[in-house]
Length: 128
Length: 414
Image (tube, rainbow over all chains, first blue to last red; front, top):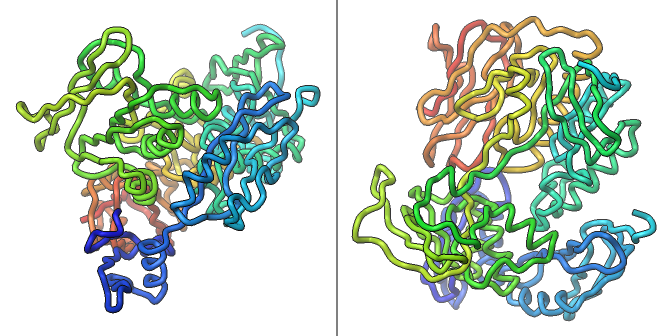
């Protein structure tokens, strides 16, 4: 949802209660959160509305093996606006087998402090 | 039956999140010879193509991707003396638990002390929802598109429309945008979205993909390739409303319109199926109507989260091992039905006098601030009551009765 919308509605996902939060504009450019049944709802809504973070998963072609692709993701979430710049970086990857699950393919991608890691093990042709 | 014969204590059919767990569950409960049969070349099932994260929160207490979940569970299986047969298809299953199996080594028979069904599900197709129009290329189920994009590196089109708001459709909407495909919109015939709220937010709203409720595709146009689809609003009875049609140019249509348990083998063995779940009718041990044949995961009922399919697998594997070792259930005598606003409750049968039974259930319509009850049909007594701030048809929920019960029950949301 756009940052310009007056009110944003979201469900808190920190616990199974799933409070339905309403986030409006508060004093001094801050946000006003209602609908939360505990204290955790406020920082959750603030982050989701003002500084949303996302993980990113895709797959890239791999060489030197029978499999065509190796799947990758980020080691942790990044600011949402970094998703497409990081996708461009990932698109340049052409890893060669063997690749191990968890192996870092791009360290500290675009200075985010987060790594691009392989999410599956792909053995070299001779091993598979 | 003739041919080479092999025996095992527990045979598990299907090597996805439920089947892998069932094989492990059988070993942990003491089964000596466990055979895991998978028709694909690799274990893991559909998890291999689900590259997005969000798996493992309950089983591994962290959020990981589908391939990681599959690999971790597979590593656990490979550490055990479980015989894994990939590239192996079970062709037939008899009520006395003889499997006809075909593999690269040829045809053989397997005699199993107990069998766990874990074959997963299929996607509903265009034919099953009967969309009129031509039959061009460019129409995919969301899961087959996911396979082509994530595992085979194929570009499936340039401009896509998605029919149905199931989670795979939502995940694929985002995936296609990442691959440079324009996603024109997601159309859902019901008045509510079918996928998880997290996916509505992260896959659609983040990327400004419109979600149109109470709408459906009423015609597909194009000769060799999809050229456009016609969408229209629907009325209360889900019939298209004349005059609301609009034409959306696109070359690709993805269908995310439901999943169906794949029970061909169960039918061959004579397993009684439920019209409400599409899966087997089971008791609290996950045993079907055929003694020694158990069921778990998406072949039993459609799950929203892979972890729960695995937990069901662990339980089914354990019960199968105990059956193979000679343990026989007392025989279920209590019937459990779905009450008001509950689509189904599982298990459908329970052994009389058994305490601590837990039911999985789904609601028919979204509701807020409700209490779900397990009620005795004879006495009207409420054996369990659980409050929910919100229940959605897309969510599988649970309710447990602690005490022993002696009468038929109804799980309802009055």
